[in-house]
Length: 281
Image (cartoon, rainbow, N blue to C red; front, side, top):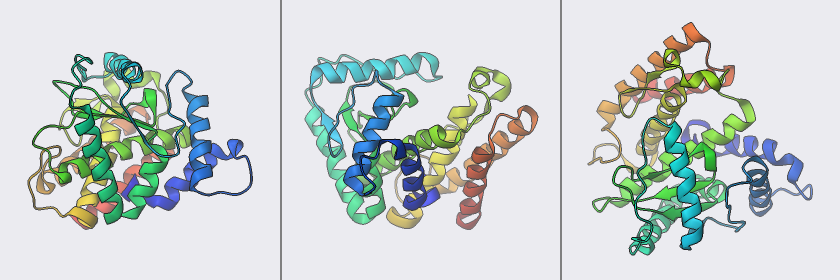
């Protein structure tokens, strides 16, 4: 969503959602951050948000435990378990958080719009160990970023991870504003499942849709900022990823033609992906 829509459209959507909470008519990044946090408290009052003026890199065991439980709850309804491990074994949390913070700063220098949106919509970052996932975001705790980077990650891997998860977060926000699916209940029905772009597996429609959007953003990050032809860990190589996204979008559109599961706005986003992909391909 960062590259797919650009910073202007993302900011316009956020301002539309937060307009009721502006204390004054003046709009700047600080006031937008304050009103965004008010929105988070209204939409998800059970989530322990930070109220800080920039992303909070959380170290307190109590808050980390609360946040980890939110991701564990999500995995119970998701098709992928997160398997968050023993929270008493977090001796290297400072290293994980510093690596994340350092790469976010470096990527913001390479591409300032990333920094504007990351510092605006990422409320808190925490580390918790997992034997399966390397971190992630969840619709149940928008603005929260969980990280468990692998030992062999380079800066480039973290750049792709950060754009991947920022794209998810921005998509959650756009879903609040515009809606993506005509029925939340039907997302659990196998008839609405479609092909995922990154994993190449049949998954629930919301996961498949997010995968197509996020994968397109990762490709655009490579195209505009970090280049294509290097080692990849988190995502397939560009030569593999482009046809996988095409296949995913085709699968999603075929399911939608039969089931009518996508809103007009969601269909528009897929069309935007195809426009970028046709150039990259």
